[in-house]
Every structure is written in C-alpha cells, then in structure tokens.
Image 1: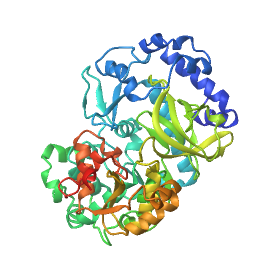
Image 2: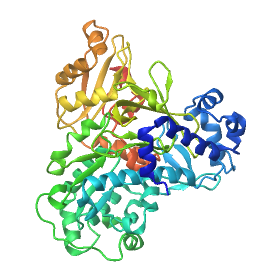
Image 3: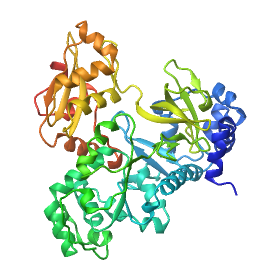
Image 4: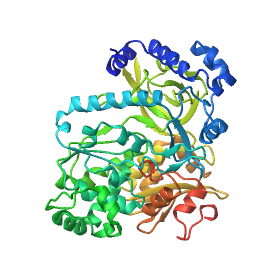
Amino acid sequence: MVTSIDEFDASLRDPAAAVQRSWARIRHELAGSQFAQEQGIHEATSLDELRARVPIRNHQELLPWLDRVAAGETAVLSRSPPQMLLETSGTTGRPKWLPVNAPWIRSTGAAQQLWMLGLLRDDEGLAKGRALANVSKAVSGRAPGGLPVGSNTGRMFLAQPWWIRWRAAAPYACYALDDPELRAYCILRMALCRDVVSWTTANPSTLLLFCRHLKLWWDELSADCADGTLSHGPAAKLDRRARRAIAWWMPRRRLSGPPLPSAQWPLRRITCWKGGASSFFLERLPEALGRAVPVREVGVNASEGFFAVPVDEGDPVLWLPGHLIELVDDAGEVHWPWQVEVGREYRLVVTTEAGLVRYDMLDVVRVTGFCGAAPRVVFLRKSGNVLNSTGEKVTEDQIAEAARVAFPAAIGVSVSLAWAEVPSLIVAVEGDGQIDAFEAQLQRLNLEYAAKRQSGRLGPPRLHPVVPGTFLAWRRRRVAAGAPDAQVKDPLVLSSERWAELVAGQGVNPNKV
C-alpha cells in the first residue's frame, strides 16, 4: 500500500515524475466535466498540452463557472460532485466560494497527515496533552443551489477521528457560536481547565488577541473555572441550549498565577503562519504568552488547497503528490517546481481535484532551498498587495519588518498611501512608536523608496495614532461581513478606501492629507 510518506519521499527524488503522476490523477477527475469539455482538457495528456489549452485564470475570470456550481449545476468543474463550498475572504466585498469534493479532501488530508506526523516525530510530548486550535464555523449558510457553505478550518476539525477531536481543548460547539466575544470567552473557559500543549491557528495575530482577552476577562474566567460554570462575562448571554451544547459537564480548575497562557498551560509548541507579514506579530508572542514557545509553520495552504508541507523545523516543502503546482516569476515566465531558483520570488498557480485549473492564487512565495530535489518555500504576500505611487513598490513584508522595529509595543499597524501632489505613506498605529525609526528602516529595506524620498518625489511618512480597540473593531466588522474568523488578518497594507474604513470617525481621510 502506497502511503503519503512513500509519495512524498518519491517526490523528493524525482519531482518531475511526481508532478506527472499528479496531473494524470487530476486529469481523470476533471474528465467529463463541462469545463474540461469546453477547454479540451480530456485531450491534454501532457503538461505542455495543458498549458497550451488552458490559460492562467484568476478568481474573477473563473467566477462564471463557480457561480454555476453554487447554483446547483452538476459536473461543472469536476467529475465528483462538490460536497460543500469553502468561504474565504476576497479582495472585494464579495467572499469567494470554492468547491470541495472527495478527491480534493483525500489530497489535502494526506498533506495534513504528513504535517502532523512530522510534528509528533520532532516532539512526542505533543501527543500527551490537549491541543487548542482556533477554527471557524464549519457550516455558516447555504448556496443558492443548496450546498453548505463554511470554513475549511471548521471542516477539517470535524473531519478528524473522534480520538483526535477528544484531545481538543475546547469542543466544536464553542467555535459554532456566532458572537466573536462570546466564542472567544467560551474557548478560553474550556481550555483553561485543560493541559494545553499545542496551540494552532493560521494567523499569529489571533494568538495575540486571545492573550489580550485572557487578561481582560481574567476575573470572570477564574470564577467560572473555579465554580464549574459558564455564566460570567460574555457567557452571561448564553442560552441554556447553547450552554449544554458546549459541555454536558463543566470542567473545574482553580486558576492561579498571572493571566498568561504559559502560566496556565504546559505549552510546548505554537503552530501558525511564519512567513511574510507574520514576523510583526510573531515578535510580540513571547511577551504575550509569558515566555518564548517554539513556533512551527503550518505550511502554505488556503481554502484552495494544501501546497507546501512543513515536515521539519525548516521551511515548508512543496507537496508535489497533491495538487498540480506551477510558479510564475516577475517576468511572467511559468516554471515547474524543478525549474525554480533559490532566492527568487514566484506567484503560485494551481490545478486541483476540485476543478480549479491553472488557477492564479495571487500568492507570492520565495524559494529558500531544497529538500532533496523539491523546493522549500515561504509565503511572502498577496501579489499586488503593495503601496506604489512613484515606482517605489513597498511590499507588505517590508512594512511588517519596519513596523516590527519602529512600533515594538503596538497592538496594530496599518499603512496606506496619502495621495497629494507629493504623495506619502500614512501610518495608523494603535500604541506607541517612532515614525522616524519606521522611515529609516523602510529606506534600508527598499532602495527605490529611499531614492524617491531623497529626490523629493515622496513626502515623509505621517503618523496617525488611532484609539484603543480600532483593530479589534476592524476584525469584528470583517467577520460580520462574512469573512471566516480564523482567516481574518490584521491589515498591514490597505487601499485608501479600506484605510478610511479602519480609521472611520477618527478625523483623517488619506486622500485629503
């Protein structure tokens, strides 16, 4: 029997053969679909023929087919019927709905299994305690055609075997609560009575938010844990049915020590995104947790699929036995995984079992090395998520690094362009910091920005302090608009319109600075 480990090992030795096998399997799954017939995919036996027949498309260009899936049409994108639609935040106000079918679930599940095996191999102690994971609601609505719509993190949580779900520090019923504050309180209430050894979430900013919640609700949580209740703080809003769904019995523990996760749990490992803008939040983790806890990458994954797996403490390795992966350089040239170069940046283009064919993820990764012959990559940013008025092209990861140095104690930082005769950056900060240090660091990181500043084509960045709670309010609005809670990222780079939403009512319009 061939396992995911065998397939992974084979892909390290011969990436080209692994990709060809993946294409043969995915092509079989796509055959017979309306999309495959229209594009002639059933005749594309080779990888070169696939490229010749199907252009690269972004989400907007694939939307007519995706809308047909949501409307209930059958065999639109794949042979296997979709089981649900995963909702993920889009670049516009409309969330994306992406189909999930059984072959896609098997493919992503194999990558998830490989990630878990590597984690336990490196730290067997993680198998002896409870695991806390921040996930979103598995099903939050229905598409017009009747398919359930929800989050990938919630789907994965419920798809786990019962004995893994039993190890969860909080029951799924906590994650199914709609109110963000109520959900966070209930998760903390249940988890504080468990010996949590690992804490997993996509965004490290979520960990910082929960650390702040722990301090804010410490007295209420202490009372509930000591009394075996769920009735203080935000939990006072719970009705009897919801309270029973969370737990038919309430665990007890008398809390002591400071309101810090490391003082309440024997934490051994944090698992979250580490690439790109995450560095800004990761540097704040030791203080928020109460001590430094090793952080493991969760990989390059999204609602579209699982693309790079962390199998050790190094950077994630492309998961070539799964989806078909192409990489596009900044000149627009398309490469297969065995054709990339260390140190270069590429945009991910993927073909999946669920029917996304040559789908432009708009995710930029950097190749950092190789594991065998397969590339190691780190996620950097979304393509196009840059600030550019005169050719300076300031990226999100550069903003993150400059903010990390200049605003070490800030809860949130967001940067936009202030358009004027001489444009400049405008920086919203919740907390303290030095705009001069931000400017100096950004000039060091981006030579084009430095040149534009020195020539006077760009003005000096302008600091705009925001009131406490601004970034928490932003998160709540995004969740209320339909973004899965576990996927909401604190916004480091925003358009002028989105920046104005962030600081609404606080007296600054970036277009009129």
